[in-house]
Every structure is written in structure tokens, then in C-alpha cells.
Length: 184
Figure (cartoon, rainbow, N blue to C red):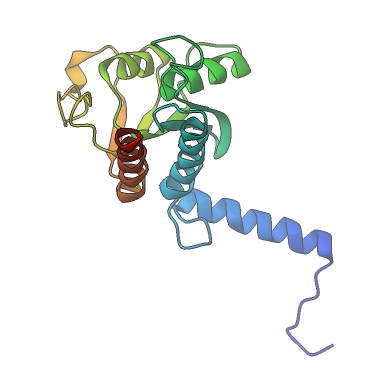
């Protein structure tokens, strides 16, 4: 064998590749040229597509803990006959059940549309650590679009916010949904 060449078994190679991927995820890149936020937002977009497939407004959300998917959800207000069944709340309920605690202090939420007041309230009550959203919502958004409830002194819990993650894709999905609805 030539000097300096390392031979890895398939198992060793897989473990090495997974360790590199985890390192990249923690450092902000997933190995495919996307940031971690973009990776998780793509999963939220998949949830939004599920909502669209059943005739719901296409909004999706995922909750992540320790670089792992903990919960996901999509709008289910019509399906469940529940005005509170927004994607964020569906995901929060699932995450809380999964960990057996309503406090999601080490969790990050990714949602395709800027949250409304109800969903932001649920995030505060759940103690979500960070909230990432895709596209602004000029009609109901409360993180700067319609209202601005980001001031840390407003609530007993402070959430870090970041918007505009894959905004064009999130916006296009919603616009296409409503355009098709108007023409049918």
C-alpha cells in the first residue's frame, strides 16, 4: 500500500462521513452547500406541500432539538375543524408530547410563514429557543410585517428570531396556492 494512503472499512467510512456531516451541520453547512437553517426550512416546505395536498393553506413547520428533527406539522385548520391548528401549534403539540414536557427550551422552530400572534404566543409559552421563518406575512405576521412583537421586554421569555430563510420558495408556494384557488 502506498505511504500515506488510508484504507477504511465501509463501516468506518460511514461513521466518518456521519461525523463530518454532524460537524458541518453544527458549523452551519450541510455538505450540499446549504446552511443548516435552509436544510430545516426545506423540511418545513415539505410539510407545507402536505398541507397543500389536502387543500389547506400551505404552511409547514418543524421543530429541531440537538440537530435532530423532533416534530413537524402543517396547517390543519380545515381538516381538524380547529382554528388553532396552525403548523406551528401542530408541531409544538407533537414536540411536547414526544418529550413529555410543555417547555421546549432547547428547541428551534422553522416555519415557512411569519407567525401570527397566536402562534408567537404559543412559542413564548413553550419557551422555544429560536424561531426561523421563511416569508413575511403582511396580513397577520407579528415579527415586523403587520405588527412587531420582537421587543424582549414584552414577554417573560425571549426568543431569537431570524426571517427570510428560503423566502422566495416559501412565498412562491403560497402565491401559487392562492392563485390556483382564485381560478377554480
